[in-house]
Length: 88
Image 1 (cartoon, rainbow, N blue to C red):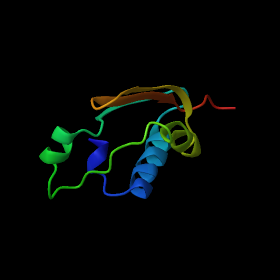
Image 2: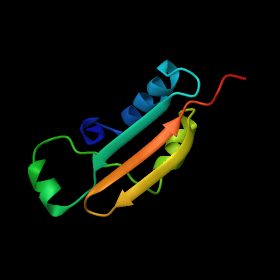
Image 3: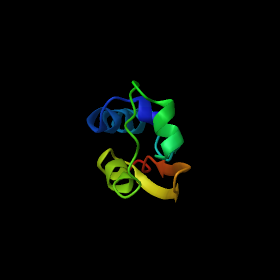
């Protein structure tokens, strides 16, 4: 439900907080809907900030994660797995 977070900046803050609270080596996995006509119609008058699969890996890295995967099924879903790096 990341698309209900009202801005990219707030999504990035959510990513940073998730990284902060995970133990070293902990995984963060997400799946959210991709933009489609039907999805847009479901969200008329509602918050809808869809993830951009092209920028998501860098956004997760800036939040402190090591990115394992970002997968995109156009007009269906975007999924990702990232990990908090092990303690040094």
